[in-house]
Image 1 (spheres, rainbow, N blue to C red):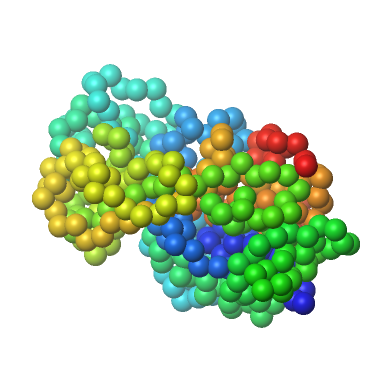
Image 2: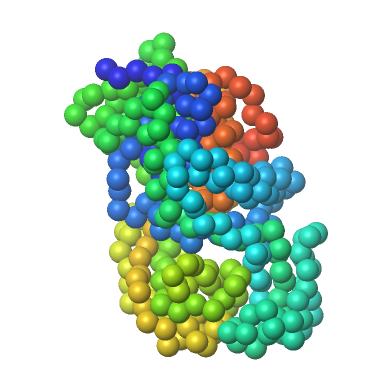
Length: 358
């Protein structure tokens, strides 16, 4: 039987970040990672948008955590490059939130109104809009390259063991928690961190039901560029990427674990792109894919200890903000896994806001 100080279930960005956070603090770590079709980490657009999406981040503690997560990225990626030699592209030029009418909408502190003339100057390929809010500290990260770098980072720690297997059950009957794997193998640890993405609720033996469900998001990559800023509007968003590409997203579909793509979504996303930027309407389609976001009923992640099972830590249910919150979740939960106190108020993210322990 494999043993470690910390066992992490889930090999996406959040699980990798937690494993690195614990290993960097001297713990031995076993990362249980199974590749699944539709995993969200590689499927997202990499937006870092707590300013643009502040109305969805209810409460001061939630917004502070999200802003701190965004602002951690420059230093985190610098350290990641030093250890892995992978330079992860980071865009901090801001996010534009397009306005439909001429009246400047209410906006959070730090954001500014851009009138139509200025908008046309800074983004000439956009269609005519009355103006936009500029959220100057937001942006995006290339999550595909980030995922490659995080995998290399985790494997650079001598104290980390990566087990490519499916975790099927949690056994809390003994002095230390165990994760039972397919094939009747087991991994035992001082604590178990649940970071299994959209599939985390399928684990048997949980101390309570986990209200994490998959929500499909379909996206396109178009072979055209021109935008400088990530741009919201018209029911979707555009994300410029290197290599002359623009990402278009995204649907929100409750279809279970079906990660296939549909012609209806392709048509809808193409229409959104053309509405926001006419040049994109004629751009060649490079790829069309889907990912499964792990969504909770209130849209917030589940983070921290389970009072009914002290050996269990949650790092799941990040929904649309898994990429934004991966590094800060890794640092926070990685520290808690080795007995340190969290540096943020995690009360809004507690499992206790949902079902009672079973």
